[in-house]
Image 1 (cartoon, helix red, strand yellow):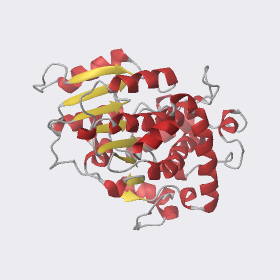
Image 2 (cartoon, helix red, strand yellow):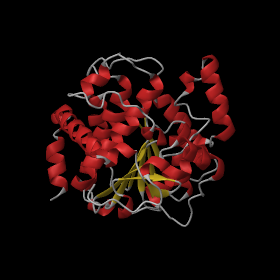
Image 3 (cartoon, helix red, strand yellow):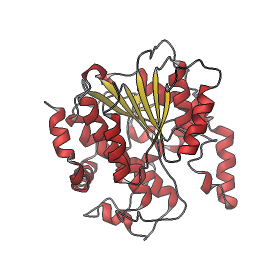
Length: 344
């Protein structure tokens, strides 16, 4: 990173399980207020339920003029429109449902091209994710589906949306906020020394659904570490925010099986936030933080350290390898050209 902020806690302490539980027990994010989004346009992905739906609701509460719900299932998206419109006097087409499938590069390209038709783009919340309990490989790319959706899909959208925003000076500086997680600090990341790295993550050896989810969140932090100096904050402020532990999200609904899964679900219900409360972190990151949060991670509605690995020499090597492989993966989308244009 070009300049690391002075954190009030070390990366290792921030990433510890004890700190995580303490935050859940003793910190409740404040409702975002004192901000008006009148005349603004926002895009929220993964917005048919959970954190995405509640973030959308909170943005509308702040007076948002135009909202794009980017969802994989349009039927669920339409149901979300009905719920969000209830008890509101909104103009026709104030909320639209657009299809977006993170597992498909074709869908991502089509979606971002469509966003060029919007008059302005002020806020982009990249929230969609998955947490399958069994490994599957993407039929088109051959990559682990968790990595494809949570990392590659999110990373490609970040760059492409920054490129679209570059062409809309009236929206700048826009905000691109990615839903992250404290669990990025918890992975063993056994594959980190593999070269190449991404193909190693496609192998079934030692695959574990919880650790794989942790890895995907860490991959994005490493990616952002390399991306931040290439995207001027005057164009788009890009940050990652954790909603904390949320007990009513659909993300890990398939994991609540068996004795262990049900025990974890019970623990989540005891100390987890509702999606409505957890979403306050995401809304806060998207509307209340400026250039000081560019390329940074937010927890407790403040800039906090990412996973410890990000700040180490070994982490720098992993980030460089991941960046090169990611740029090669995205060559078809001319991402290098887009990044070069952002600096002009």
